[in-house]
Length: 218
Ligand SMILES: [Zn+2]
Ligand SMILES: [Zn+2]
Image (cartoon, rainbow, N blue to C red):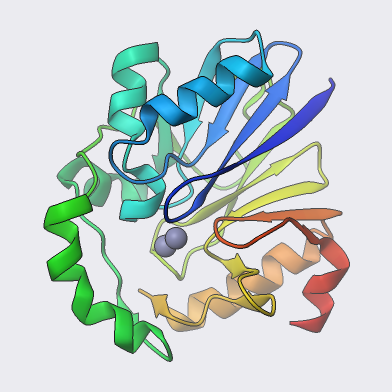
């Protein structure tokens, strides 16, 4: 199964188009109103249909355009059960803030009404270890709670890790340090990811992918 990765820089976050011989899976869906940009890029880079919209976690910058994309393409939306409700309600649950998060957290009530996500109903509830072969990918769900209770990575071809906001490489690569619903789980999840020894990491924010070996230095 040949897999190609296309990185899509959106206004606040990254989305990834994972292209295989049998179609396209999208990882994350930006903020509200970015569906046309995402669809244009999918059309540019592939002939394939959008098979699945995989949401790493229910924050405004990761599922904002998911409902619109589903309306246009019919592709199902996947998320973990513990983030399903927040996505269905159009919410962003930050948990508790640390570091720079303390500066950002008070802005959320201001920002959310302006750029808050369209509520999106999940079609596929994923759990740890779920295999996404039905959607044309050799991909497995890795449940990595902490940043949100239902945060999940997606491990493709056993070596490419789409990590949402678990790890960020804005500035110096770092483990999530701004927001978590559960800080102790975040640390456990990080170790779980590191134990997978992925070759490459694709974070939800940052200028470029990270080599898996960089995980050893975080
Ligand atoms: Zn987040
Ligand atoms: Zn984010």
